Length: 207
Image 1: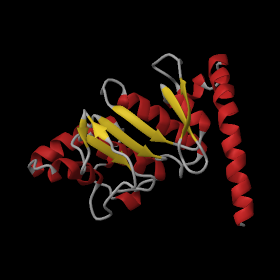
Image 2: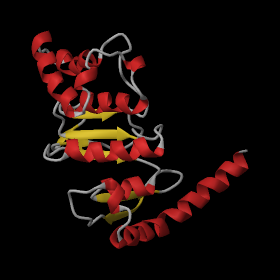
Image 3: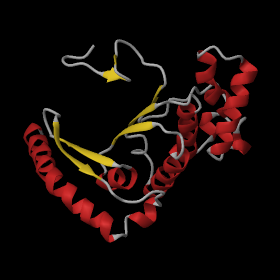
């Protein structure tokens, strides 16, 4: 239960898990005893879809994330980036209106992380879904977002909001090199720097 405040989705007070809301975890949420296809089909199955229908729907998304040749593989047979693709398919197969993503790419190496950022933008395009993406990586935030919200160090409250005016579609590797990206980066960093310094100071005192 929340300690304070209320949350509304489509104007309705949230008292449980709202429909059409997807969540992508920081760590893998795949079931180790199920194949790629059955992991992606699990969401539709929980919603009452038959096994064959769920598998047909899952197969579309397994193909869209580039894992059609691996649908019979188990999670332990996949690389970290491939498991993240499974997680994306698990989320998107349910056609969410809102996607909550908690540092989903933080455990990946730099190159794989950038590939997954590009993949997220490609798969999200045209879905109409709203994404709330939590990250400590300022470059990632700017490259992906339409709006960046800076939180205070402690307690976590909204300090500032910045509109990202970079055009879409975006190539996350190319957009980082543009003057427009650097200008937004400096603007957000000026607000964020103070919170980073406070967090570092608190960590050194605690240690």
